[in-house]
Length: 215
Image (tube, rainbow, N blue to C red):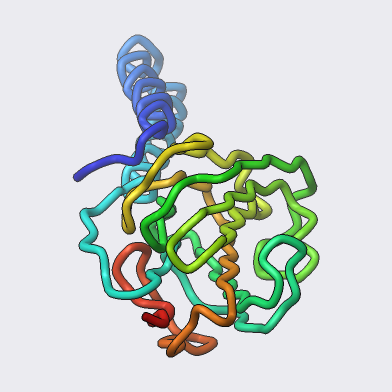
């Protein structure tokens, strides 16, 4: 199993401490030994959870504009963006059991990355747009595309793998949001030929097509 970049310490820390509690229990009396083993069990269980949570499976890039995130489509709307103009906004909610590695939706160059500090409102709420977030501007063959990684209640850090000026291929990894979170993507309306998803659909990052683009 491949583990997401920047996540090994989350797995190793509870695992090492848990093993330490197990060894420590050998030198304690029976009652305290059970207490030590209980904490060891909880910590090792937590390490196993993080091992599964931070998995980073191989993905084969799909056609058109692919999803930047695993999860469920919660919103599809037409908006007027200050940078992109008229565009289609697609919001993807990432649950605790989803893969949290985010990927490029199309080939392009990173035109800008902006980190905004904020609150930690549950990611499925509209007010979560005021949460800590990272905005990535992508210059592609269909024009500018915006990707916003939004932290949730439990997510306390967004780790970005790319830098301004990087030329990235569709399906390549751009970052990870730790624990529950959300990703919004803004696509220029005039670039979309066919929308391939609807609200409620479950999709995978890098593989599933959000929209087919005009030639």
